[in-house]
Length: 311
Image (cartoon, rainbow, N blue to C red; front, side):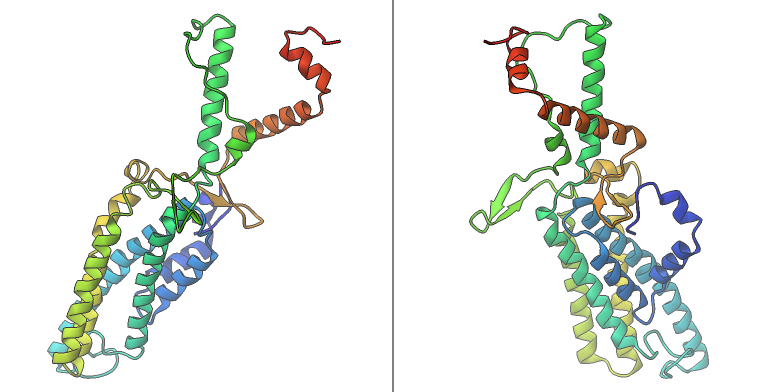
């Protein structure tokens, strides 16, 4: 969920965090889809990591609550109503799906599916706002190599094309795009999400299968059998989210996603979770840029000419 940098440990100590987790795991009465809708609206949809996190959170909770937990609850209800001959009752003793609010819950279930597809569609147009951390790490390693060569601890750099050090503006800017759409009006990147985007076609196929079974049950069944069919079709679609699970297992998620982590500061802005060392580097680079901008042009020309002041 959206939080400030460095608050993960504090989340585990907060009762509100566990309350939110319990709400997201609750599979009935449309509680989970509505909670995910609120979280999706709060997230920054322009950032790659936030969109990927939304997709994986939706699919992960779909598998656990909409697949495993809902399947266990449905099995218990079916066994109970079969033993007591009360499958047609609306309430606790009825068959799976025989409770009030079931159709509203099904509509909310479809809403969850639409949110996942919307996140997939927005993924190619997103930015890598967390790329600053990687840029700072590369900058620091380059600075260490320069210092070691200056002290003689390492041999000098071999002759060849000199790689220019990225400026502060470049490091603070999100990663760019490689393609354009709609006559250049929309910038896109084919690498956003890593190996995750191809699963959109799989998810579409799984939903079409479940929706086809729902349509068949709606036409051929009636009463508690119709509701039970709809219930088990939702469970089937929930279990179909199992291919998304490797994307949430570290360190596989870094290899498969290539998304740079981001979080939210106290002002609600999406930003990379910088460490104290990264913040010191950014502060030093800003001071260097300010001092560079305040230098006299004559001094700059003298520095470029090897210290010889131009008359």
